[in-house]
Image (cartoon, rainbow, N blue to C red; front, side, top):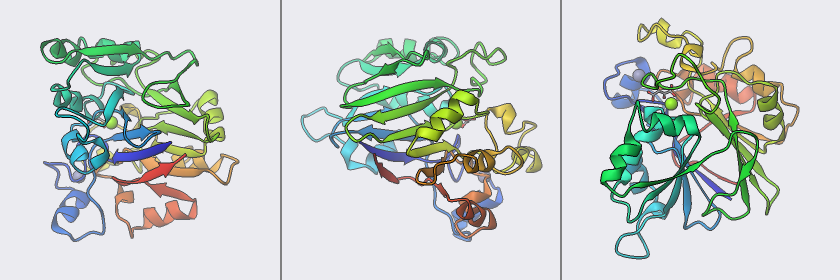
Length: 306
Ligand code: MLT
Ligand code: MG
Ligand code: ZN
C-alpha cells in the first residue's frame, strides 16, 4: 500500500493568505528555513493508479497538479481518484469536493452519518451535488467493524471515533456525537503493515492508545505546539483543545503520548500542522526537540510504503 501526503497543513495552509505571523511572513520572504504546505489530505493506493482520496482539501486542484498519478491518463474524462473518504466535515477536509463536481459519474463518498448530516445541513455540499454529478454515499461504521473500500485491494479500514470537535457550522457543534471526527486504522492484509491516521485528535482514550500501539505508521495531529498558541499570538480566544486538537508540548501532550508507546520500530509523524506552529521551522529548537523523541514532521509529497 502506497500512502501519499497531498497536504500536510491545517486549515488555512502555510502560509495562510492573510497571516503575517513570524512563520507565514518568513516563508513568504524566504527568511526562515521552512517549506510551504497545502491543506490536509492524503491518498492511498495499492496499484499506484487508482486512489482513495482521504479528505478533499480546498487545495485539491494544486495537489492533483503536483501528483501525476491523480491526473487523467486513460480516457477523455478520467481521474486517478476512485473514491473519497472524509474524516470530519471541517472546511479544510471537505471543500475540495466542490472542485470534483465535473466527475463523470456520481462521486463515491465514504463518511460517518454525522459527517454526512453536516454535508446536508450546515455545509450542504451533498445537496448541491445533486445539481452536478451527484454523490453516492457509503456510510462508514464506527462500531469497530472493518470496511474494504475499492479501489484498495486487501486493505481493511476501521473508523475510530475520536474526541475532537465538529465544525462551527455543524448543527451539533456544542453537542458532540461519536463519528463527528474519526481516526483511520488502515491494515494491509498483504503485508501485515498498518497505519493510523488522525489529523484531528483532541484526546487519546484507551482504545485509541491500543490502536496506536499496534500501528507501524502513526500520522497524527500536529496542529499546535502549545495549548495556548493562538491565544498567545492574539489570533483567537480558543485553546488547542477548544478546537479539538492535542498540543504537542506540555505534560500529557502529543510528545508524551508518543513517547509512552512501547514500540520502537514504528514511525511517528506529525501532520495537519497549523501555520503558527514553530515545528514548521526546519532548523528550529522545537524541531530539534522532536528529533530527540524520534518524531518526524510531514511535508507535502511525503510517501510511505506499508
Ligand atoms: C481544524 O481542524 O481545526 C481546522 O483545520 C479548521 C479549519 O478548517 O479551518
Ligand atoms: Mg483541520
Ligand atoms: Zn501564520
